[in-house]
Structure formats: C-alpha cells, structure tokens
Length: 131
Image (cartoon, rainbow, N blue to C red):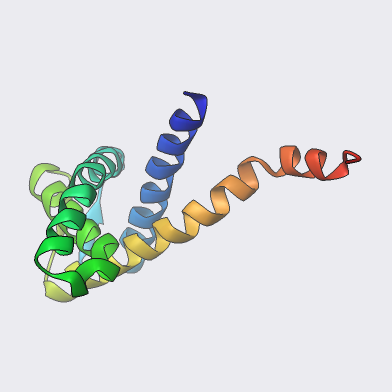
C-alpha cells in the first residue's frame, strides 16, 4: 500500500515538473500558481485514466501508435486540463505540440531522478551493508 502511494506521489510530482518546465519555456503557455496545482492534479488523473484506454485502442486499431501512447496521453491530458482549468491557457498549435513534448519529457526525467534523490540515503545504506 505504501509503495502504491509513493508511486502515485512520484507520478503527480513528475507531471508537476513537466508542466513547470513547459510553462517556463513556452510563452504561449500561461499558468497561475493555483492553476498549476489544479492542472498538475487534473493532468495526472486524466493521464491515469486515459493511458489504458489509449493503449487498448492503439493495440486494436493503430498498432503503430503503440510507441507514442505516452505522448498521445499527455496531449489528451493537456487538452482536457486546459479545457477545465480556468487559470491555464495554451495558445497556438506550436505551443500545444511543444507543451506535449516538454511535459512528457520533463515527467519522464523526473520519474527517473526523483526516486534516486528521495531514496538516496536508503540506497547508500543498503549498499554499505555486508552481504
């Protein structure tokens, strides 16, 4: 149970990092602080729901899409989040595409690095124990 909660927390934090990276780098993406918090939670929820659906649809109908499911899920998540969160706006196709890539990439990197930093002491302690 604790691992599941930690996994969910890392997923939300990683999406927050990705959204923050996109908001900082793209002029066409604007977020207030409250909008950022709401958008991070909503994006994570939408992606968690949409990912299995999009994966299943791609398996049946568009097998070539299988490798890009995470990007499509991020794009769909951003679209739904942008439509719902009033303190978030994305202007222009270039912003939409760049935001999708940056949020996906930022979340991917954060998903790799966050556990390393959060559990660094535990990892070091386990490596020092004699086997």
